[in-house]
Image (cartoon, rainbow, N blue to C red):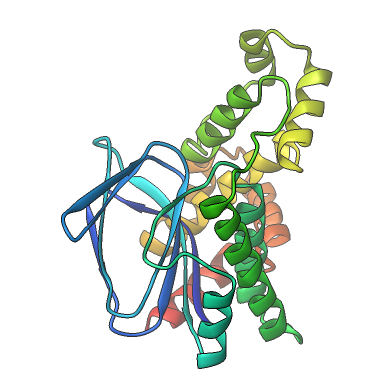
Length: 261
């Protein structure tokens, strides 16, 4: 498979009509959406995903008057790739509810980082990664995935969704722990058990994703973006951005502009 593009934390303020004349598009939605195809409406109040095939028409609308958030991968397939997808019973043009998004979210993050670096084994890494997403999606579609047996999991899931929905917010661990009626130590332990990453790492990552969105879609200065993402220090923002994206914010903006030109 050839990966043409990987975009994270995209936002749409109104309904979107997706129509592809070539290639495939994988879309992962973090917020409530409605899928409309052939007059049939499917509503997903939690995370969902869809693989849109060549030429398939799909309307996607937010359920509320707020932008819906999504990650997407545009890719090309060979006949062997398509045979693989059929053999693995991967759902095509059919939206799937994602009950546990850890595998898909973490894989998308790794793919975006690899897409920017394009290292020595780039093609092999990207092909294996997208197959991980396919398999995970297939399990969600046809299996009966269990909700993790973790205390207050639904509250932690709602918190994580909120962190990625409002990356600029100043989150208070003490306030969160008070509302959940648990200690700080227990909170951090359960958060890591639920998502395989720390609360702090998710807060940082949500801000870096938001920064990428602003770098791509606005002409704001690096300092203005740093402030909008909740950073008091421009140098600290740039340090964290480089750690996650393997380039500076300015370099990222140039890469994105070159891709779209």
